[in-house]
Length: 398
Image (cartoon, rainbow, N blue to C red; front, top):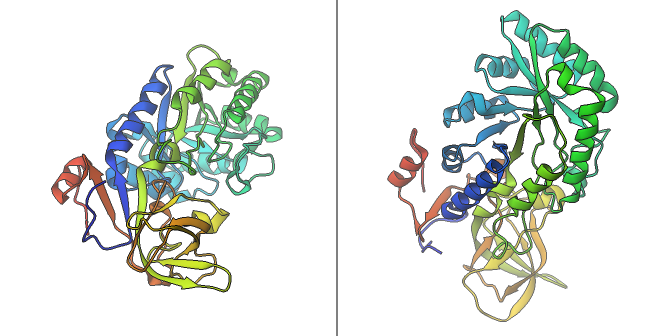
C-alpha cells in the first residue's frame, strides 16, 4: 500500500494494477468463446478507470444520454456503445441515433413507437434490441432484482410478440436481437443457467431469427465478494462465461454480448476516511468518520455490507457502529463492526468501493465531492501520469 500521508480525507483510492488485471482476465475469458463485453459505466464513470477499460477493447453500456455522451468523450467507439433505460427522453434517443451507437435496448412497445417516430422525423434508422423480462429470480436483494414479470424494466413475455411485430413492420427500425438483465450482485451461477434455458426457449418460441435477430445481450450482474475482498479480489470469470457456453443453444454465429460493471471495478476501489470522533452510547460505541452516505450510498439504500478495516491501530478488538457525519439517521456504514480499539485520527478503509460509490456521490448537506487518488506499482500517481493514462483532456487531483 502506498504512503497516503498528507492526502486530505475522505477520498477514493483506486488500485489500477488490480483493475488492469481484472479487466484483462475478464476479457480473455470472454474472447475464448467469441463473446463481447460492454462496460456498465454506471458502476464507475471515473475517467481514468474508464480509459483503462476502453484501452482493453471493451465497449460501453449506458443508461442515460449523458452516459452516452461521456462514453464518446472517453473514446469508446460509437459502434461499441449500447443504451438501455426505461425512461429515455426524446433528446436522448435523438442523440443515440445521431451518434450511430451500436443499438438502443428498448424496454416497451410504447418506447418503440417513440423511437420509430423520432427516427422518421430525422430521417434515421434505429438499431434496436428488445429487452425482455424472463421472469427469473436472480437470488439477490429485492432492490436490485430486475428481471421479474412485474418490474419496471423490460418487456414481459406476453407483450413480446407485439414488440417484435412493431419492429418487423417499421422501416425506421432495424431489429438486432434480444437483451436480458436479471439483476445485480448475483453470486451464484444457478440464475445464469436458468437464464440460458429461458433464452433458448424464447428464441425458439418466438422465432427470433426469422425476425432478423442475430445478437443476444445477456446483461451482467455478476457479483463480487464483499465479505472477504482481500482474498477474493477477482471474480471467477472463467466459470461465469463457461455457463453460457455450455447452456446456450442458439443458431451458429449468434453475436453474444455482456454488460459487466461491478465485477470489473468493484474491488479496485476503497474509501479512505479519518475518524473524527469516537462516542459511547448506552449499550454500544460509535466510530464517526469524515466519509458518509454522500460517498457511499449502498448501505443506506439496501443495507449493503462492506468490509471495514482500521489501518492505524493494533489494539484489542471491540465492536463499533461505524457511521458518517451526514445529518441523516441512515448514514451508517456498518453495525457491530469488529475493529481494533479506535480513536480520533485513526484511518479507516472501507473496501470494495470501486462500484456504485463514486458514481453515486451526493452533495447532500452541501458536502464537498471526495476526490479520486490512483495507485500503481505501490505508489500514488502524479498528475502527468494520470493524464497520460486517460489519453484525453486534463484531470483534477487533490
